Length: 79
Image (cartoon, rainbow, N blue to C red):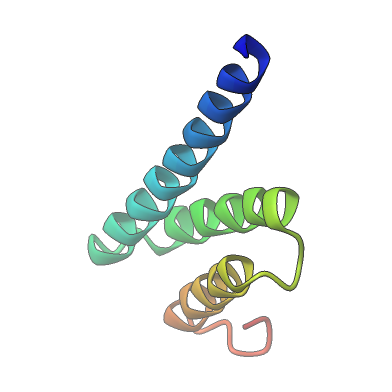
């Protein structure tokens, strides 16, 4: 049905959006823009938590990305 197609399209858009934010964060990290990268990784984590819940493997990978970003900035206690 039309509603199902719209829902599937929205789900696909969410997946693409999360991947794009993650990729932008990774690029920011490589460019040494660590504060911006952390913000983007946190946004990605937030979206994963909403979409999948706290214990989903994708969400846990996003947690690890935030932790790595914090570690790169020397924020060891926060990481």
